Image (cartoon, rainbow, N blue to C red; front, side, top):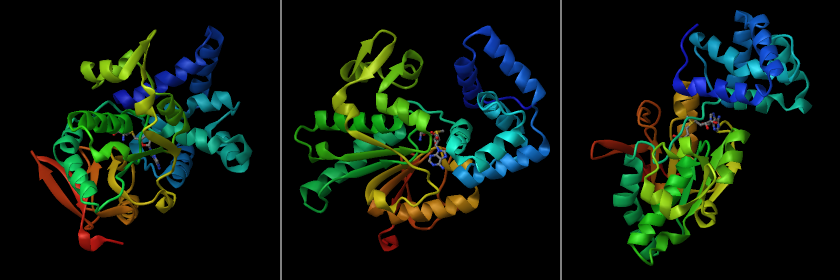
Length: 317
Ligand SMILES: C[S@@+](CC[C@H](N)C(=O)[O-])C[C@H]1O[C@@H](n2cnc3c(N)ncnc32)[C@H](O)[C@@H]1O
């Protein structure tokens, strides 16, 4: 069996924690997993189902991941095999298994101020540009979209960067920026909306002075203050679906999600992101992702050797 990456293993741990309350349940699950190995045919069928329903494209070497991530659902749904699980998902939509399978297959790895540079560029360059546009009346309100927000660290990091910018620039017209954060996974959105983070989550990129300014500690969790929490509106959204109704955005974060998609889906997604980005609007991708092979609608900008993208003016829709 191929080894699990940290984020992939993490998902299994969550599953066994949920189901492992009590020795009986854990033993039952382990037995179930031994008895229900994923066959090649089941893997191919589930892989197609997963790509069709959320765009996540799994290579041949990812059978272990499907087996590991969906093992808990076999037990939960009393299914004797992965084939039976899939048949229930397709044939009995009232069970809501489609969402559960997609939820289990998403990798929700995230952290505060991930990679730092996007937030530094917001502070030093982009928010200043937006302030000038607002002051000159060329823009009424700045709108920001985090397109795959996971448990909320990304949109809240943007919100905190906005807060800090306003603190350093009193009277900044950016105060009323609108922040929309979306994800396909209901379970991560539930955690994001709560705005409560444990020590492990807080230890991943949160500077202590920001923590102390905007969070209060409550037992073992840190609670984000209401003013920052309310800056972000969370919505469930599958990036495969039409999202033009979200309106136009000046800034889009679509980070560390394209890596899971096929080239065809990436091309389509860039086109649709371009369609809802304002002319000259800004797009941040993950540090290992690039728009260049998939679209010519964005210009690549390099700042301190870090990359981001701006919608070409002539690409306006
Ligand atoms: C690795 S996390 C990245 C989180 C955050 N953007 C970051 O960079 O820290 C990827 C997120 O994409 C979401 N995702 C995967 N497929 C999606 C889809 N088709 N539509 C919307 N979100 C999706 C997952 O649920 C997951 O939370």
